Amino acid sequence: MKIKIAYCIPGLYYPSGMERVLSLKANYLASQKDKYEIYIILTEGKDKTPYYPLLPEIQLIHLDINFDDLYTVSPIKKISGYLQKQKLFRKRLTECLHQIRPDITISLLRRDINFINKIKDGSIKLGEIHFSRANYRDFKNNRLPSVLQKIVAKYWTKQLIRELKKLKRFIVLSQEDKAKWKELNNVSVLYNPLSFFPETTSRCENKKVIAVGRYMPQKGFDLLIDCWKIVSEKHPDWILSIYGDGMRQELQEQINRLGLQHQCRLEHSVSNITEKYLESSIFVLSSRYEGFGMVIIEAMACGLPTVSFACPCGPKDIIKDGKDGFLVENSDIEQMAEKICHLIEHEDERKCMGKNARLNVERFKIENIGPQWEKLFEEVLK
Image (cartoon, rainbow, N blue to C red; front, side, top):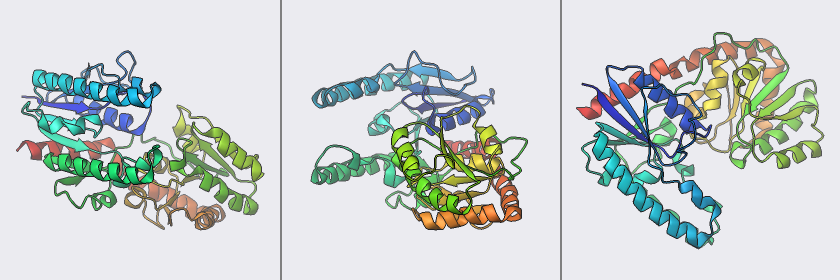
């Protein structure tokens, strides 16, 4: 008899890491047609095509709640609108789960985590998080006074922990992050799977360094540009290319101010990012924080050594410092520049690290990560 698994996620039409990882896992499970029946339950994007392709065996269920509509309304309407939509969401998700009767329901810890444990449809409830604990919900970015921010954050965290304790299993992305959930005894670590593993690898000979991510403060590209000023003074013939979209103007102004127009380029996001990795010789991660760091394992799969801030969380679980890359103290641009220059100046070591990186990340292939999820399902169903 097939095992029914239902995933709850807001939408699938946006090209971000959570959507990509879920699509990979769902396709892996759905490909085993005699074993699993996969449902993905959505609240947003009813008329939009999933960004990442899904096997036809996967059943998408649109609850048509549309929380995204609230982004453009006034604060008062946003509060009342949210409460109404949350009530409707709970009603429709309850009806949906009672109708399909999954064996396992998996929350990706969005709005459904507030009530999913109360739905008595007979399914085992799991949760998986795609952020580190410290950065799951950042209340510092809202307009509330600091005192109120602390009160709201404390209340919300207490409520979240209460719901997480009720889950049969709570899955995080790194051993580093697991250690931060001290109140819980139901935490498991399952890494994100690679989205590709190319047959060819970089020769690590081109005078190119690559970084990839959204142009936003989290990714620390402002720190990387300052770092590249130091590198370019020693190696003006090397180019840094940063692929992404977002807060472009501020970063370009910083590049212009430092006179790096010819040594540092802001590139738009591309669909063929694998080719860009293969054209490069070093990958750099300058993030202030991460949930895991998918771009690290992608670059390493292409045979690139990595220089990364040891930010929370992910890089320390992935990179073997000194063997396939370098871990640098978080936000230390001088040390990062030093390690980049070391790889530039030592070609043989750079190439050796690139080969080691490729071998290291084979453990993140979907054929290795997928069975770990299957084992987890078997354990909770017992």
